Amino acid sequence: MAKEEKLLDLTECNVAKGLLILVIPMVLGNLLNVAYSTVDAIWIGQIVGSKGLAAVSISFPLTMVVTAIASGIATAVNVLIGQYFGANDKEYVTYISKVSTTVSLITALTLAILGYIFAPNLMVFLNTADSIMEDAVNYFRISMIGFPFVFYYTFVSALLRGIGDTVRPLIFLIISSVINIVLDPILIKGIGPIPAIGVEGAAYATVFAQAISVIVSMIYLKVKNSIVRANPLNFTFDFSITKLIIKIGLPFTLMQMISSISWIFLNKVINSYGELSSASFAVASRIDALSFVPLSAILSGIGTMAAQNIGADKMYRIKEIFNTGLKISLTIALIMTALCMLFPEYIIKIFVQDDNIMPYMKSYIYAGVPSTILVAIIFSANGIINASGKTFVIMLFTLFTHFLVRIPVLYLLSPKIGLWGVWISMSVSNFFNMVFHLVYYYSNKWQKNANLTLNSASKDDN
Image (cartoon, rainbow, N blue to C red; front, side, top):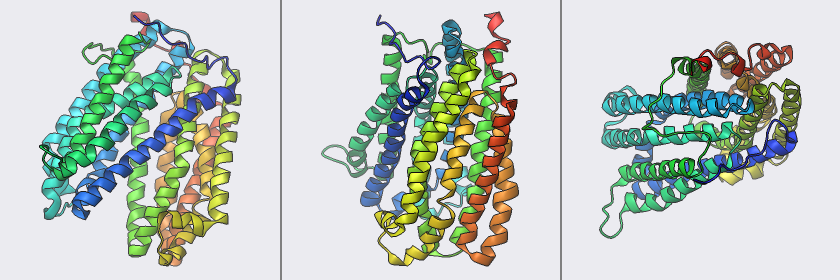
């Protein structure tokens, strides 16, 4: 049995060094995810055509829901593992990982079975056109077969991130991405004795790639004798830990759903201004995604480091973690904002060559892009608050700023100033969200019962 690899001590190391070691692999992983989905879309679009792309994209809202549930559980697991690992309670880290594996497996299988059974009904609910109904149902059903693998990868990544290992999840993702990229054209178009199966081929390629990634991750955890365990056959249940996972994870899931719902309202208004407006939003989303790649990685890095230090009862390091993460985030946000505002035409033409879209895009560049700076601040505070387990508070901030600020401002301004109103509504809601996060962070209210290692009802029973 191999000896467990020595990890950087995030409760003792230089904060800037620790954050960078955590963040860089996650940035690369986020970029790989973007490339992963882009390659999928390219192959389907080039080989199957627009109907194929439509069949795949129609289930996106459903995918967002199940992904939000997986992310909620992963966030809770990351917080719990991080805090107990920081407290140097390795036995309980192992126990939590076993229990959370069971919770994740039950959740993933339940969602997969329900999604598979009700796929036709869900496609009808989404007003799927008859011409793509069969492909859409088949693609979603195959995706649901593979969903437990997606869930498992997300979960294992959270486990490893909780103990400060962000390199291994990147390696697993690279393996999955390479396999998917190779299989996509083979299964979509067919080659030799392998028949062309179109859209279904893309789904099968993804499922197979994710399954291989899961097998590799399971072998790694076993061979390396990792402190975290994720054997799906080792059924371990603990009500108190499950309750904590739900308490921390459910608000995070609801927060993502709230955000998705608010985007529906934004999309509706944007699409009402015509094809060029919709195209400008597609480009704006890609620019936003490039900004969010590093910022979301920094959020996760702050959360992991903060969780370990809270568990180690080293609250005095939290301020430095926040300030260091904030400086890195603001630097990235300021650079991205400056580049977009100083060279808007060049940035836009990276994505589209149509000059007619320029007026639409410039409203986004000048009214929407600057709020990236606000997002950088929000994410930095969010990482600390998440690490303390106070995800319910963040959900309330999201609920208020999206439904009581963003949507009202959207419908107040967009009839008067068009797309400018859309981008301004986003910036205004981000401003209020930033204020709420900063006020809550500096109030230190998040510190109350933040150290979950001191408040575990189940630990004494093991």
